[in-house]
Image (cartoon, rainbow over all chains, first blue to last red; front, side, top):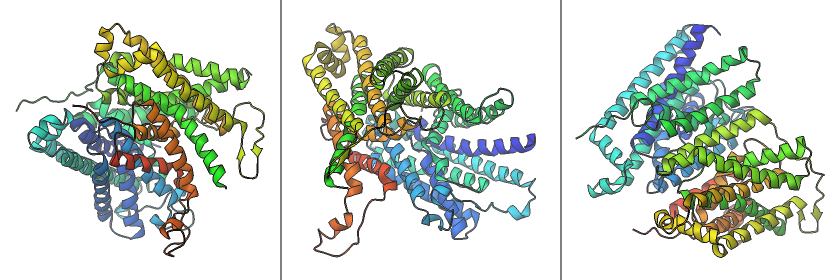
Length: 304
Length: 306
């Protein structure tokens, strides 16, 4: 893999994870919702978009919207039972919900059209890449990077506008406790549900982009571990700061992808290296929580 | 499979879950955070026992006891290094920290011992087989240790000074401290007991099935489910929750739901309808979400005052 190709690949991954990190930041950083199942939106976006494009032969753009809508709806639905709960219950309930969806895709192969070695634990291959025929194998990654960047910029603008609007002030007050927003007559539960739906649909967007870039998805790619990588991004970058969320995604992705080259210099097995990489991510979360609670870019405190 | 067999499987599962949920619930009660590293501590004990048993050749019973105690001490050290600095932080901050710790522990184990399934060096288990059921000696051990843990917790909470101090500190830490209870000392004991029992539970699961670095993650949702089901922070709730979940997981796969829809044969709406085995892990997940929906404070949970 040439250096340029690798950098383009890395940038695409950074862009996709930055979208995930922004959407989790909206839920955790701004609203205080400890969503430990964020990967479910990623998973739903990837699967729904694949089903729409591969099984129903619809265009990519419809897959993208379909994935976002379903992921957003799912966010709305899972927050019905959980919206009034305390944060520790939130964490475990969202984790469980994400696993239910993953187990569903693991067991049901008909949802992706079935066929030999398709769906279920086998995963699905041959997911079409949008406008692939217009580009050569060499130039296509650049085009895809452009798509990802457009999506990232759109996500950033929407979430940033939202968090600076009156809506953003309400959700930040919810994060600090239910009493104040309730005293002002805000329906706390509805706001939480909206945040889950909006964050969820952007998570879905990231999933669509991921599926159509790799051309292959399987339930094993959506393990809870993914959620925790996104958490590391939000915590390191700075919660409740959108620039911080993007910075966190960039840093964690660089760390995550550059350590793979270590095996060229140190005699170490790939499996061990992968484990050590996750040890580092875990320690990163602990250290950040202990010594750098605000993250690299602090939340802007504004007086109104 | 006979009903007796399903009941036995349910009780075995309930005992395993009890050993793990008791610790989760007392740590929550004392420190007011959901410890996502709880089951990973148990896996540390599982692999320590593997090291003592397979690498050093110790028999399994002393290996299990030494490993569990050592893991308990390890958790105290982790508490001193990490959680002690966060006593005044909000529950969500500590919870996320415990998550980071869980990831680090799980993958450190994987880096050291590898990702493959392993087994303790124990002689092949000859199950006791009767007309209605079969049970292995390990399963009997699981039930006995589970019962012993329940009894020990009951004695501890209600018949010792430490238990009284524990209950006082969890109710009102400032008042407890003002009355001369060394809260930090109590916390140390809580960690030790919580993690030692969890580790014993993990080792027993490892004996019954096999050992994997991911076994802690595989059981975390059932353990949380049992804890929340009974009412988080209440040891008796954890025992009850484990029992309910143990039966739900096993009977969930055993019951023909088609028969229930047909009202036991009166109607003929549905064919045979079983939950596919691939969905077994989903039972506890679904149950957890149902509990949160209907009764978030759990079966034995008290209504929050104020």
